[in-house]
Image (cartoon, rainbow, N blue to C red; front, side, top):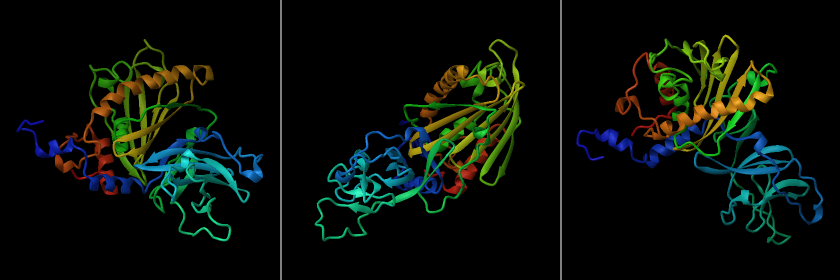
Length: 373
């Protein structure tokens, strides 16, 4: 881009953010619970015992490597208890996740693949095979640990000592009247976590990106939004018409369906779209994991209280994947990945039309997630 008419601010925005901006983004996002893995994906994948307990049962043990905010972590279930450690051995920096789960003094520990050093759930090194029997392992030989918990079918990690918000509620997930399905994407989305939330919150793109499914281009008008804040939640509601589809509780070819949306953004990384239709309720729930400043892992969950026959799940999953395939290339084309402040005028949201996005971004600025360019 060399056109002299292009604003220098806009030009800079298309480059990689400064290291300072990236670290500020990591610090701000690190104060919140972040989803890193589905609980069902933390399964035993080859465990090992030690010489004195080769027949030990490690069925409650498993570990996986993940990346959160550009930090490599190892998520482990040791003796049935979750732990999250920095994925690095203090000896010569090998990845612990390449090792195996072993037993030290009758307790499960993560064993480094390089020299066999083993770490307890609290990150303390509990075995150095090369160390003489009369020498104690220094307390300084430990790796950082992070808060970790399990909720809504996911494993969540917080980098801070005190999360600024609780893990959001998703009541329908636990209600027997709803049929739950998920969409697991094999690839990351090349965008930031807030961009992914904004794209899901943005309803005015429906007629353009999802024509014939969520809207029509001959009716592109924005609905009348009601936008409020409630604690750690941004709430948006509106009523609109959409073509008949699985997500509107009607079959293709039927007349347009009137749908009421009650949307909730749980700051800063989870969004829930609740669609109330004449047939029933259809819920789209997205929890985003900021792998780094420009890559996001998406955990999609869907709930419906109509057409709950499990044999129909595949059709709903295919529908969701198709809608997602329409969004993904457009979202990945947006730059800068880190949201620019309003004063830069890099982006030009319109009052009223884009009110949900404006309010979300203002809240992000308060949290320090929006970065100066």
